[in-house]
Image (cartoon, rainbow, N blue to C red; front, side, top):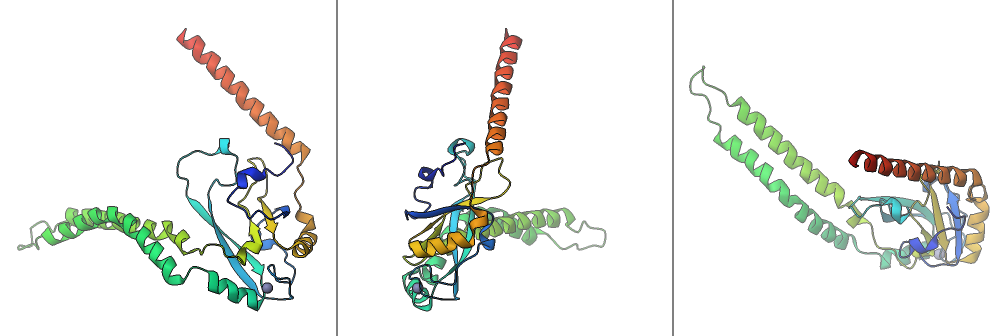
Amino acid sequence: MSGTPPVDRLDGLLAPHANRVELTGPLRSLAFPNRCANCGVATTGRLPVRKVFARNAGYRRWASSRRYAGYRIDTARVPYCHACLAQDARERDSLALRWRRRLGGMLIRFFPAVFPLGFAVYLLATIEPPTHPGDPAGGFERALALVCALSGAGLLAYAWWDTRNCMVPKQTNVTLAFDFSPDVSDILDHAQRRIYAMRDAAFADAFTALNRDRIWRPDPAAVRAEKRVWIACLVFLALAAIGAAVLNG
Ligand SMILES: [Zn+2]
């Protein structure tokens, strides 16, 4: 509800560079200067930098629950020169290490799939082929085996999908030169909004100038609208409490 960026809740989510700007709109439509974000030399090279965020990482604490809400992977295509790309490749977690992490996570998640898949195999193995034309052909067992196999396959697919964060390399000294926060927009905002933190002041100035149309300024009307929503919620809760008291009394 306040106009200043609530930086404290981004602790650990965003590099602590002093050069920051808060921009509206999606990551993929950012405009970047043709210079390396790390060392400042001219370049047309781009590095897709991925970050894993908890689904509600950027939102206010009272709007989120403690329940596991999944995660999302966001990508920004940041300009880096050849030398810095090479340095990033040297510092980055190896592909083998990331796969090891992922396989470890997948094995744990595969475990529940053993039961439906095992039962499906058992059912198929116990169906006896009809010896006479009039005998039941085991249609029910086949259908049950199919349902079990599908649920097992669903669990395997979920294990695959839920471990894709393991493949995102940890940020390196190079990728930390240009860092981005999760979406910090509020419930009533129309567009997503992120805070960008940059190590190099000259790069930050060029980046901010290129995206000046997107610099976020709090809209007083939206703040008032949000206040009205919260007041309405409080009034509703108070009325509900009074109603409950009257009904019980
Ligand atoms: Zn560079």
